[in-house]
Image (tube, rainbow, N blue to C red; front, side):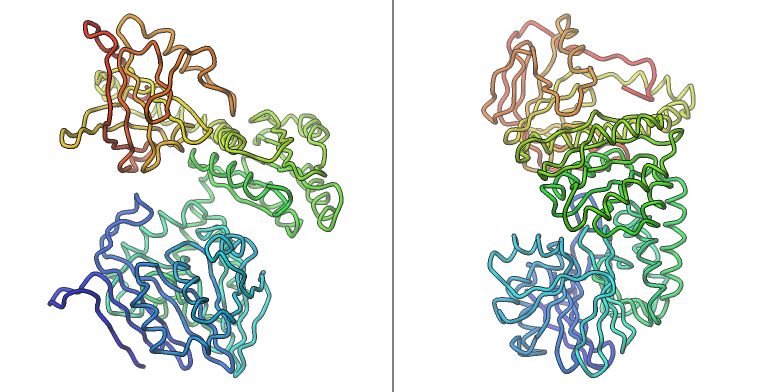
Amino acid sequence: MVSSMQRAGQTSNKPSRLTIAHEDITENTTAIRSLDWDRDRFDIEFALQNGTTYNSFLIRGEKTALVDTSHAKFHDLYLAELKNLIDPKDIDYLIVSHTEPDHSGLVKDVLALNPDITVYAAKVAHQFLAELVHQPYNKVQVKSGDKLDLGNGHELEFCTAPNLHWPDTIFTYDHKTQHLFTCDAFGMHYCDDSTFDEDLELLNKDYKIYYDCLMGPNARSVLAAIKRMDKLPGINTIATGHGPLIRHNLEELVSRYADWSKSQVKVATNVALFYVSEYGDADNLAAAIAQGVRKTEVIVEEIDLRTAEQSEVREFVGLASGVIILMPPQSGEFSANAQTALSTILATVNSKKQAFGLLESAGGDDEPVDTLRNRFRETDLKEAFAPIRIDDLPNEQTYQLCEEAGTDMGQWLTRDKSVKQMKSLDADLDKALGRLSGGLYIITAKKGDIQSAMLASWVSQASITPLGLTIAVAKDRAIESLMQIGDRFVLNILEEGNYQPLMKHFLKRFAPGADRFAEVKTYPAANGSPILADSLAYLECEVVTRMECSDHWLVYSTVDIGRVSNLDSLTAVHHRKVGNHY
């Protein structure tokens, strides 16, 4: 085997921040490894202990395929190494396992070197790539079972693996080498000079953390992918997108994924979300609903009614605690399969265990929502949210409505679990914790045409230079989506003796999409968010960072502007008797 290494930055005994290496992992197959030695964060909240790698692969037959690229930060190093290994004009195919930027960040640059390359990817991936590449390119959409013959025995077979951990993920299997290219799945954030998994003891912790953070939330999708892998003739190497390639401990590490996922599925609450991809705006609407459900830590399985096998539909419905359907078309190429799936869903639902929600996806030829709604009601299923009817093109408010409806579904499904958790706290500890007091505040935020608000009491000043504060925001709060890094909001401070009307108003349970500021007097802050006219004071803030804390996000923000309406008044204080809820 051959390996080479280039280093970026100054030379020293300590590895520099970014390096590139390549190694022939078998005859005619080369791994290009982009090593990020010092990276300590991933996906904002994902702390790393040992850096990470981004793996790309060249497969040479009579034709040549490149599997994935790298992160844009490796632009110069990666492209130089690629050119060192092959003339880009000799690359015939680029396989995009999924379009997350850490793997597809240089797709546009590779296509610039050779515009004649044909890109193989899932249908959803091509939709994302159109926004990434911004120019026409040769493309082929692939699904499970499709093949690409490179010659000299290198026949590549594709397997769809959605939600691992992006919706557009595919696996690629080389029948000659028995290598399976899995992108994120079975990977880990780990960086060292070893290309393979020789020392399992070193990798155990990072492998488990990676699974818990990225794969565990989609445990059922993991099991579905493993089931597809079992149908392949044999696998001797899993060529992952992150960390060492799996060869020496393949059976052990795959079995861990299976065991962990089975355990997750047994205890997990999940929702089956059915829609017809590319019908109207169903893809984006489904994504918004799914995001809302996932905020409550409920697993969402997204099933495309165009291609779903009826046995899969029965399995998903039978195991789901909730069912959401974006109404399919009444006619057209995929209507027959969709109609059969609806009948299967109705025959499988269990009124004692499940909730449902329905949405007309504005495709122009939707199956009537009321007919299906009445059928569900006849089975005594709980309706988690009123039917969503979309008459015009979706806008920001539409997607907010869908997200909040999904959250309502998730909260309803986890209500018993939440109560059980509250009761599980030791009584003395519960009472002692309840003696922690805090002020009373209303957080208001606006982004584009979307605005929201919430009552808060877990607020504290956190820094002086710069002026900063922290706010604990429950993951399933509607406003959480408007408090991402870079977002701006207003912290309205309530007044002692004059807080009851505002507190009562914002403690109400609002229906999905409802205007939280109806009948409340407001005026706009400099950052665009509403200021409550009856608040004692307000602070205009910007989110700087977020830390995940189990069921809450701890949001650290800097303060830009502040005003007080009455210098003689005091802040309203919230005194609890117990610590297991607000």
